[in-house]
Length: 172
Image (cartoon, rainbow, N blue to C red; front, side, top):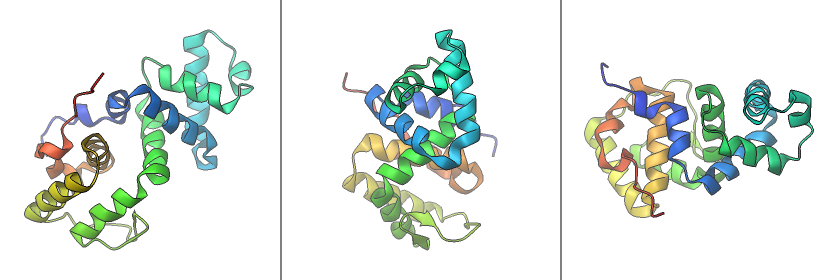
């Protein structure tokens, strides 16, 4: 695939999210015990940006760390990817499950059950994305489909061209 995937980098998807949604996702990120490596990286980023010592960042309350992380002007792809995954697992499971059901992909509560997934048929993908957009808010669908592309462009790359994957203009 020779497409430009720059708009689908996790850091770019993170910036597409409204601040309150990033704060929510950042709170989930800090609460996730499996994100320790990315949390250390985030501590370093916050410390550098805020001119704090890393120890001071570590001692902050979770909600303060979430606000600082959400407000960073840039975020690494590894931290953003982990935060996006945590957000979707915690807040968007019904939508994830609905999309996989529409595609006929076996899953357990929105998590793909198999290690590898066959690339979905193009027409089935188009139909599933359109139906998902009828059931869920456009911004949520766009972020989810874009996150799929960022995680596995070989499997989900055909989503790039779909209108449901395009960024939704903010109402602010």
